[in-house]
Length: 509
Image (cartoon, rainbow, N blue to C red):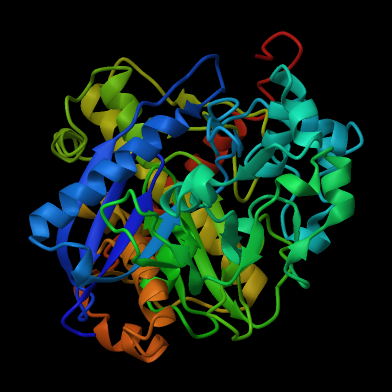
């Protein structure tokens, strides 16, 4: 099978990509297309599921064309996806009942507050010992409840068994395998663990929690492992008949692609947001420091592997905001050049709590703040503050992860688009105080999904092949003066407090 390839579909927050990998785990071709970000109200973020699916089909064609191959050369398809984005659709028509409600969306604040007994500070942990997640607007279960409560006719159709729910992986797989003509309605354990509806120990839906959220069980996809054959591409697709055999949420896929198979191995992905995962082995580790307990992966019939996760809502998307909303830069890569026009942040700190604060604070009523401003501050200082915000938030999560796990990291594996920014990566190493290491294939999210699919069909033998393929491309060593490093971090922590509890009766969207 080594003369064949694996195709991974990476359905992300801002774009969909199809990437073809060879047996050495290197990229053969890429197809990519962005989709519209829809912001109907402050705090609301949506995607059009039909646009996303059409883009997925298009990028598959682009990747096949660039590689000069057809379906006969593809051994399997793997899926990875933005995880907590909720789609509800009619299984008889194939049409979504509403736009996809994106993981960054905060409209479910009233729902989670009600589930918490009216006080999120006291009741956010209601289900945490079972699902590993505190009540937050982040997760997809409450988003489904919002759709059923607010879209005319949706609840009646759901109770009649006509509607299906899934994160984006389920939507893509259902369409890929035939849609209304026999598409399979599945998800994997990693995606299911992001709904607030799956019991981490039994790996099954928690019926009582679904009832609390008034979500009919008939809507929920069948939970599968991360690597097995779920079905085959439908007859209308360019990949007709090819097995669909891998499925992981994007951050778990990156963890797999980074070969984090030993307890204590960790990676940090720099994308729309930042997500650090640490492998904790065969038992879920509860967090006392604001992290999530989540699935890491499950390969076929093997035992499930768990992880601690630190989720940061806004990192790369802050650069996009600077580009699209403020027009300070015209393309994302320009931010590094602009930041390097100044020597430091000039005293400015940017806390991007656009969707509230995720780990380690979990404050949905926080909102973004740019503090420490004087007449001295210019565009360069703001650009540097934007980049530094990513590094400070990562350090907060790393500190929490070390406290929860008792493991002191000796290096931080990194991946994702922002790793191309040398200034950021050096500042990151300075802040965390350990080397930051980038692999040769930085597209580890798609690579992890490819590995899962390839292992399922025997293209790769298992984790040993992933380890053998992993190689270091670049390393940033910490260089900062210790006193200056800590001064900057203290001021960051002070800046964060200025964002707390902004949303109230006067400001609530």
